[in-house]
Length: 469
Image (cartoon, rainbow, N blue to C red):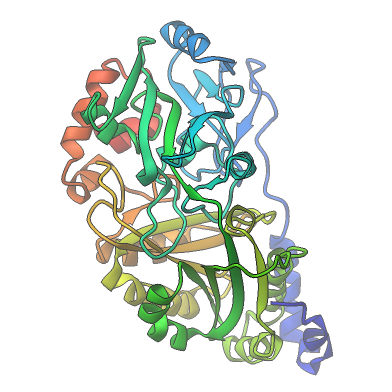
């Protein structure tokens, strides 16, 4: 997508009183959301997540520099102890009035096996730093999420994933891990050493202990050809099975109120590097916001203008190492709800969601993300029931996101979706128990590792134990 402000500015329809009123209303609502005080009554400093909707005033903040220092800390730190990485989860996973624990100083590549294509990595490493570190040893992660600001530990803990044919979520490529428990013990876990803990703690929400390092199964560093193109929304939906089979990485964004979709594919190539150039995603998203602000009062007019803005946009092509292209900068903050479904249900869910938004929520302008994920066998993985497709709905951080719960989540739940662990949802322990066949096994492991609930904040007590949040 490229800027098409001239179309908006040039249309005489933008001068109507209805549009002027809509613009005034949006200007009033387009204020910066209020921020909590920087300190509380006890002088404790504010912590907020990336989008700003979760906040806390921890009594203590800890950033141990080594595994031994962490183990010692866990024995005496005030609970709830909540690990935090980039703060990119939208759920209150890191919220605590006890100890907020950062692993930023426990980061970096430890060693690697060039023959086996594996690498041992400390859990505080940010994905954006891991890409070039692995590239330096000729390796790359098989897949990357849309944003690479997260820490390795945080990405594993919430089942963060990318998209692509036969490609698992990040935790699906973990061969072993080290876990610091509530009493300061360090456990080595893999398929043969503490296998039940390994199965339970690969996706762990920071509730089983603190993952300190992992061994990742990687692949040889490859160059990919990434293409972004605008297509008809319904044609893209119809073509989705073929697209998934034809490309290594594929996803698309349904663009509400336009009848269009942005298709993104990535395939291995030996072609010469063609740098991605300046990011245009943010400006394209704000163009959609401008359309909403000017023409939100008339869906047909909004679509008419949108199609003249984006129908003739040429495809964008870029060629480079995969770690440089698969993740993106996302400077525009948002709140997000994402659920995962059996592949066969994904497009039906998407169409229902788009229809509901276009019928009831003219304020929505963020594109809706559609991805595909291969299965794995972690007990709390949303993908352990077979190949999955995800649908992710976003709301601009200045806008009301209540529609995600009132309008979108009922559709997601009716189709048996499992929520992304780090993204907005209203589910509780009984709901998760019904969705995950090995839920009770995982909760038994958690209770054994942390019998006093040192790692449980009020949200996790509700989500895992069924207590009051």
